[in-house]
Image 1 (cartoon, rainbow, N blue to C red):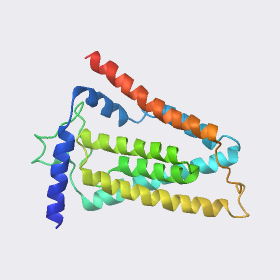
Image 2: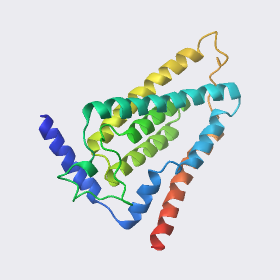
Image 3: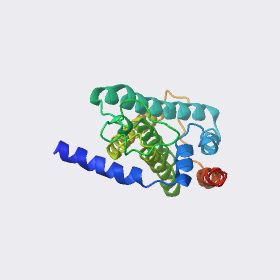
Image 4: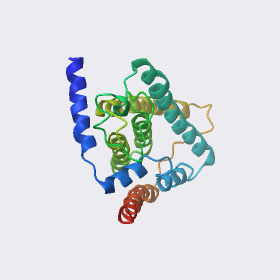
Length: 225
């Protein structure tokens, strides 16, 4: 059964990683970068700190906790326990893998830290903001970011699925703790004030604009050769 799932995962990787073109090379490289989503992050900070800086600090600390737990569980614990090689380090696949700018990643790939971190943040924020459109957009962001790792050749689809599951579980757990602590009479951040429709509209627009900017920059890079 395990062998069948691994074989299926490899075939799915070949299909997804094999669907490449020069424009997507630029776009997926940018999407996967550390500083690609600055506009979205600025809008998030504005919403989080919108009325009360103490609430904002606490919310930001829990977002950081979500990322830290996702990253440590995926990178420090699971990757070095399972020790599944990335496609770029799997000898039988190396000649077939499409990579961008010579990037091959570290040795082990299961589970994907990018997927864990992005889905963890998406789950936490979706639960915190509780708006359908925002939830759709933030999970779309997580999906695009995670898919970029397959496109770049550094993760199998199974790595992404595993990372997404870790992220969703951690995001939900951290939000549960967040709500419990904020509800105590001992906290300085008892009031859970929901963002206004205007504030949520700002952050939704920022996610769309950020994606459009990445597409535009990718197009410019493509046409400039």
